[in-house]
Image 1: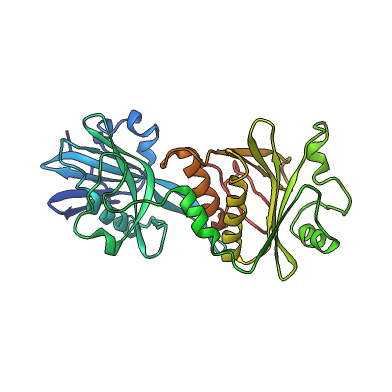
Image 2: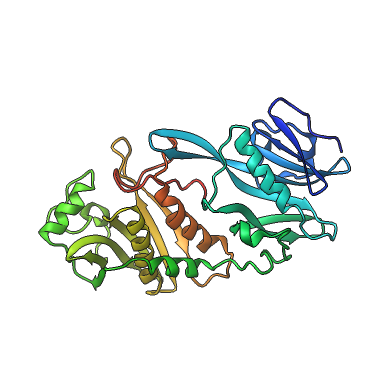
Length: 351
């Protein structure tokens, strides 16, 4: 196999005896045939930044990055995020971790900010062996520099040996414990006071008056729904709420929600509300409302099965997307949608 075509935006490094090439847009290399569409599910690798690892002139591993829009204040940038990894295994385990970590740093030098999941951690995918020759990731784990050591060994079952990744439910429950000083209540009747409605109305693009059937426009033509209201209060004032519909098919549908604390408090409160909903049934179904002035209201749906095996993309997506990404306040592309004007800008593209 030939070497990558070196361009002005490519760099060559030597890491642990391997030659490492990190490339910005576009990734020009004939080695893409080795790491083909079937391994990644992405036909657009030629438009993707990538890090290639070579041994004796032969590509043995690659990592490509997904561009995601991230907002820092008023500035919107395209940041690189680890999207997938493949490697020729040949019985040698997965020794390329440090190569890719160096590649991540090189991406920053190439002018593509690399988004770390934690300022004190390096981002790297959990990998699993597919067949005899290919390793590909299912989830993403954050390994701190102290935990990294010389070389973090990886198992063939999708996890780093000695670095157990908390399950999604563990992450939700752990985060929910940060919701301090809150009183939670559940009700089958609308519990909102005049003061609650005033706070809700301040955050919405449409008016909601006391006494109306909650989201009357949503349930017209669907009579007989019984909503459950989960409300959190702090010092007697509305801190947040979920309005859910326990469906006859066993799913619990989230009709709407509001959060009225600061960013850190909202994240913990959301987890606390979510953990309570998960305990109500075998499954939880989240419907999120678009409230853009320029678009019709519509719903996008995400399903969670809290009893799915650890690493299942179903529950993992809801955990990562709702608890990690929802509070990035990211600016959306035109094809995406918004939840509400002052809470979150939230993209479903990565689900």
